Structures are given as C-alpha cells and as structure tokens.
Image 1 (spheres, rainbow, N blue to C red):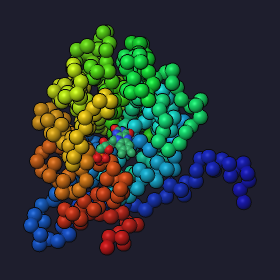
Image 2 (image 1 turned 45 degrees about the horizontal axis):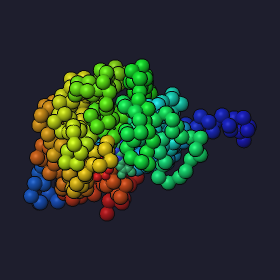
Image 3 (image 1 turned 45 degrees about the vertical axis):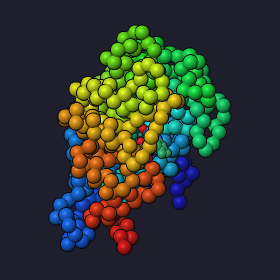
Image 4 (image 1 turned 180 degrees about the vertical axis):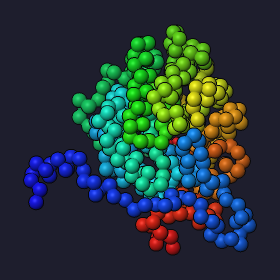
Length: 405
Ligand SMILES: Cc1cc2nc3c(=O)[nH]c(=O)nc-3n(C[C@H](O)[C@H](O)[C@H](O)COP(=O)(O)O)c2cc1C
C-alpha cells in the first residue's frame, strides 16, 4: 500500500496508466469508401471528406468544431468537463476541434468562468486535453481572446462572488458611458498606447503556451464585439492616435497581434483569425460601421502578415444590429473573402446543419472548411451523420465501431 505522501504525489502528477490509449491507426471521420457503390456519384469522394492540409496541419476531413464558451472554468483553468466535451468531438471524427475563447489576460474574460491562457499554470490541463485529442487522431486549436468592452459579465448558469469581477477595469479602444454595449454592460475605460502594447504581448505569450501544450493551431478572436473587433469598427473605436481613424489605423491592433502571435508560434503551424465580416448595422445607424469591404482589405493584410485561415462570422459589436439568420447566412461573407484574397483559406460558419449543405458550400468554392457550433452540441456525432447523408463510409473510432449499425 502506498504511503499517504506517495499517494498525494501520485494524485498531483497523475498515474502514467491514466494516459494509456488504444491506437486509432486511421483517424475517426476519415473517408473509407462509399456506403452504397451503386449510388450516383459514389465514385467520387465528397469534398467534405477529403483531407485538408495547411502547413504541417493535416485534417482527416473538412469539419471544424467552432469555438464555444462553456463558462465552466475557474481562474481560467480547463477541467475534466473540457476534456469530456472537446474529447468527445475528437472520438466522433471532427477534423479539427477549436477550444473556446480563452483569455490572454484575466480582465479579457467575458465572465469569471471563462477559460484563460494567461498563465503557465494553464498549460498542464490544456496539454492533457490536446494529448487526448491527438490520441484519437484529431487535431486541436484554441481561440486566443480578449473580451474588450464586453468583459466582466455574469456567466449564464451561476453567480460567482462579486470579488471575482473587475467592473472598474473593463478596457476598450475608447471609453466612457456612451460606449457601453447597452445599459446592462459596463462602461469601458480607454486603453493607453502602453497598455495596448502589453495586450499585444499577452497574445504572443499565450501563443507560446499553446505551443507548449502541443496545440496544432491558434485562432485569434477578432469577431463578435470583443477587443479586436472593438478596434476594427469605427462605431467602437473613436481614437485619434495611430490606433484609430483610418482603416489602416483601426486594423493596426489586429495586425500587431497577428505579428506577435506569428513570431511566437512555430512557423510550420498555421494561424486562424476569426472576424465578424460586418457590424450588421448599415441600415440601422447613421455613420460609418464595420463592413465586408473593409473585411476584405484587412483579410489581404492579414494574409501578408502570416495568417493562413480566415474564419468568417458576423455581428456582435453593436446592440442595434439586425441579424437575419437563415441557413448559411454568413456564407456569402466567406465567399467574398475567398474570391478576393487568393491563397487565404476560408472557413464558413453559421447555421450549417447538414452534410449536404456543407458539401454544397465547398462544391461551389465558397469556403475551404466548414465550422459547426450548435450542430455539435445537438449531436456530437455530427461528422458521422453527415457522412451517412453523403453516402460516405467514415471511420468510427475503434471502440465505437460496433455502434455503426
Ligand atoms: C454555446 C456557444 C458558445 C459560443 N462561444 C463562442 C466563442 O467562444 N468564440 C466564438 O468565436 N464564437 C462562439 N460562439 C459562436 C459559434 O462559434 C458560431 O459562430 C455560431 O454559433 C454560429 O454557428 P452555428 O450556427 O453552427 O451554431 C458560440 C456559440 C455558442 C452556441
């Protein structure tokens, strides 16, 4: 019997046997052939099930689990919940799993229960999850995030003590009561230029931690009204220095973040950037806002700065936004970027709910990858069901093969 001291040591380090895994010689979600060879088109591999390669990252298929905040962390630490949640998508054949918005500094969290990557202490659990996902033959990224003016809010399903919030340190390109998202949000404080440089460094330090955890890619979160989007949009950026005003100036923060992350992430690994292609307020508010024309220009600059994949979403920056959400509603934005920025890979997202719909987006060359969020919450088996729909026999994980029928 082990002594209490040995037991405590083992508990902290974990037992090596806990990391034993059954090999997956072929990654779940890999194309194995048609289910019914007599069906029309059965001789062709659907695009959704063709491997995708960018730099050293090779995916078994083109389905990406989009980042989804779970508000289930304490002090930024991922837990066994995240292992089970993200791990299940890997078991069930997702090509790439992108972990939720993870704050590069504590005040960059949306809520006190967001995941963080601001400390080396966060690497350990992240690596455990990445190792698990790799053991299943899938790949893992993480979204590097800063919530900007939407920080320090309540998580949806619990109420942490007031001491865990930071109401007086919610930061954005421009501050004041008039720049609250709405009455329920906090008034942001304007970042000084020195503070901007510190946040940029924090993105770079987070990229180093992602590398140490063995992640395959990082996604810079430039969408949904968080800090980078606050800088990009003239609705939320009222600065008069080199970080505000012209498009070049409003894009400076994003481009400097990209440069910092690129310098701190292995050059053979790709970088994703997620953007909102529009504030979706052109018809609602007077004056300039963020739109697809500016997105296309910034996408070109981002590509030149070393970005490999643009992940195109929309909205989230202005409370008056008019979102007309229907199946594939954001695909036209992805398509514009893909057509106008040759050489930049594009991921489409937003109410893509079936294999057929995803395949059409790829076949019409509107995107290179398909990201799905709520579809995976409804059905962690999304990829394997999409395969069935497309007459594809896709690999099941060894342990789950008997569930095929
Ligand atoms: C529970 C939940 C959490 C989300 N968290 C994030 C996030 O952390 N980062 C992000 O960029 N988008 C986030 N999103 C947006 C999704 O990634 C996705 O863009 C959106 O849900 C549209 O895709 P869908 O129709 O496939 O769900 C979240 C969505 C959901 C449903």
